[in-house]
Length: 80
Image (cartoon, rainbow, N blue to C red; front, top):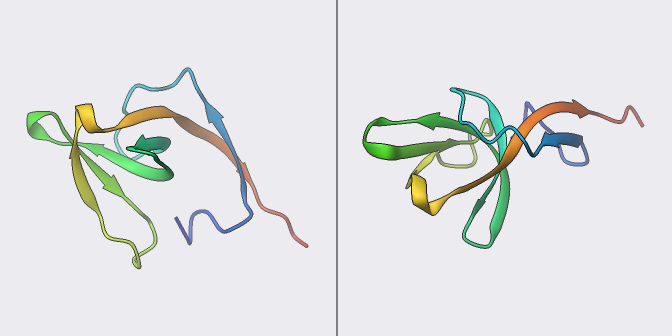
């Protein structure tokens, strides 16, 4: 998710916020893979999974193929 989130950043995920809000960042599970990604709801019950890092491609999944673990509400970056 660079440049928004960097390796070793600490994120706080609110497990009660699983409702999809446009452009917010979420912890998600697609199959056995857990990721931090930005989500966008599309027509037809599809969800666009977006990485802020251009090295990673945006992809789409059906709503039943993804589990929204929770919404990121805070992050911290070490200055060391």
